[in-house]
Image (tube, rainbow, N blue to C red; front, side, top):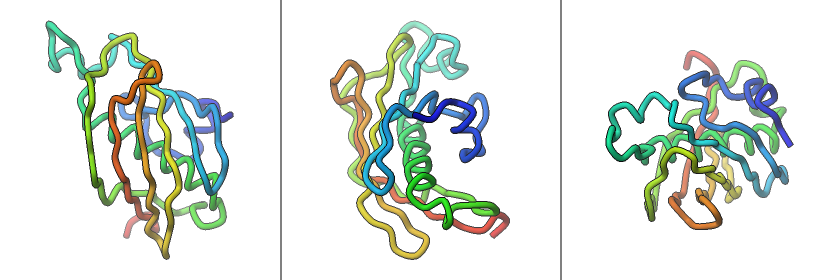
Length: 147
């Protein structure tokens, strides 16, 4: 398990863009399972949509990308250590199955597929109450800070 303080050690994101609350399972080089608690206090609910709040799909994808960053950092801490920044570089096969709203708990799953040089590939899915809400193949790249 990785708590919020451990997450903040790797991810540079902070409120309101830190979208992973806790890691509950991690098998370095294989799989990571994390939680995002969706609350009514999220700033995007003011305008998306006021009468029926829905978490934007791009933020679900961002939460999944952050989960991949955590899996990559746990899998290769020597490669993704000091001075490196982990960027989202590609989304493929993105699908949304149902809306996510206040009170939902997103279960974020990232499965390692491969990595070559500085490009990492993952198969990801987000669920609420064991029901698929979104999925995607995500690619990220590690680069030196400032490049």
